[in-house]
Image (cartoon, rainbow, N blue to C red; front, side, top):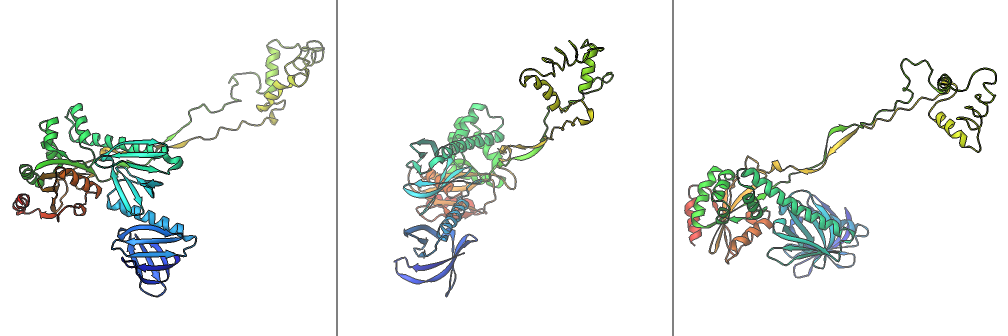
Length: 472
C-alpha cells in the first residue's frame, strides 16, 4: 500500500475530487482509499490505459473516460507501475484465454513502452493503451535485424519489437521455437484423430488446420473425400451432428480446432543416477596367499627374494648393498640420495599413497564419496493429452457457417447452450469472425460484429430460428 496525492477527473477533464489516499493493487483491482470519502475499486478489466502525462505522475484512465491521477508516490511509484503492468497483463491473458505460462520481456512496440509476453499459443503485447493478442496460427515468420524483432502477421501490418537489448536473440529464438511446437502439436493431434490417414494427406491437413483456424469443408474433402465426415464423427457430440448437417445445407461450412489447455509438463525426478566408476581399492592388491606383508617392508623383502642386494657382510653399506653405491638406498638407488631432490620423488610418492616403514603409521585410504544423484526428466510436451473427446476436452472443436451477411459459430464437443449468429458483411466475413474469435479466446459474446449477435438455444425450435436468421 502506498500513500499518494490523488485527483479524479471527469471524461471532460474537470476535477471531481482531490486529496490524500492510500493506493493498493490487490485482488485483481486497483483500490483507492481516500482519507475522507468512499473507497474506489477499479478492476483491471476496467482500466483502458496507464500513462505518465507528467514526471512522477501516474494517470489511470477507466473504460468510461474517467481518469485517476496519482502523484507524490515517492519510491513507490515504480512498484505501483510494475504491479499495474503485471496485473493488467494477467487479466488480459485470462480474457484472451492464453495457454500456458508467460515468458516476459520488456521493450518497445509501435514506439511505446510495452511488456511482451510469450505464451504457448500466442504473443501478448501490453502497452499503455491495453493489450494486443497475436495468435501463432496467424504468424508467418519471425526475423531479427539491427536489434529489432519483426513478426509477420496475416491480414495486418508486421509487428516490430525493439529496445530488447541483449534479450533480442532470446525472444527471436523463443518465438521460433513456439511456432515449431504449435505445428508439432497440431500434427500430433490430427494423427491421433485420424490414424489411418496417409502421411502426406495428414501433413497437408495439419498445415491448414492450425490451432484456432477454421478450414472449409470442401477444402478438407479435397485432401480426402471422407475427411470432414470423419472429423465430425470423432469430435462432435451426437446431439450436435444433426445441427451441423443442417448448417452444412444452409451455409458454407468450415471446421476448426482450438487448444484450450497447456500440455507442457515440468521436469520431474524419476530414477537415481549411479557413478559406475570402480570404487578405490588401493591396499587390496595383495595376493590372498602371499608371503610378504603389505607396505614398504613387504616390497623390500619381495625385492630381495627376487634377486635384490645380497645379505651378509657389507650387505647394507658395501658396494651393491642396500645403502651402498647402486643399492636401493644408495646414490642413484630407488630411494637413495642422488643429486638434488630428484631421487626423493619415488620415495615420497610411495609415502603419499599411505605407505611407510612402520605399518601402524600408514594412513587409511579415504573412500570415494557417494555420487548418487537424482536425475530429472526434462520439461516436455505431453502430446497424448491433446484430446477433443471426454467430459473435459483439452481441444475445442468448432464450426463456422457463412452466407452473405451472416456467420454462424457452433461448438461441437462441449454442451454449449447457445449458437451465435453474427451480422458481418464482406467477402472475408468468415475469416474475420474466425480471427475475432481467436483474439477473444473463443468467448463468443465478446466478438465484435456490425450488428448485434443473435443467440439461438439448442432446443426443438433451433432449426426454425436458424433458418429465419440466415434467411434475413
